Length: 168
Image (tube, rainbow, N blue to C red):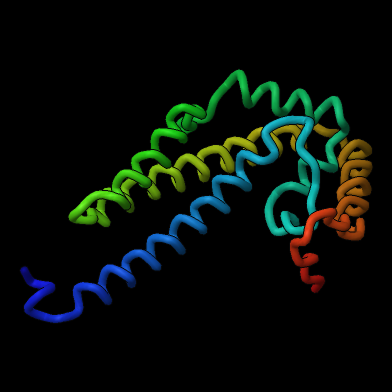
């Protein structure tokens, strides 16, 4: 085997495992952010302000519900069902356990997860922008006021033991 000849097989496995762990963490964060706010029950969080959440939270409750209803009815291209998302996670787990380890297979699953996340994000962005475009001047001004209010809210205190968000 090549790893026996070079003497760095164990080191390489650890490096690949660490790299995979970081990739899974990033993919999980991206997918989790996209799916966390999948309806009117979702809530704003100061840690999510870097994403599109404030734009959605500033919409009136009824419009926000209508927006998500439209998204559920017209699934974006590339959207993965819950079953398909679960299958990808299971594929990654089985691939991690397999010998020899196939990094390309894991990368392909991670790429599918990332592409689905981007597709959902793009669909939400498109529906939101269409909503803003249909507003008259007064409605857009009122929306801008609500958006500014959402952005100026202090972060909610977490009830668990996670570190509080870093304020800029």
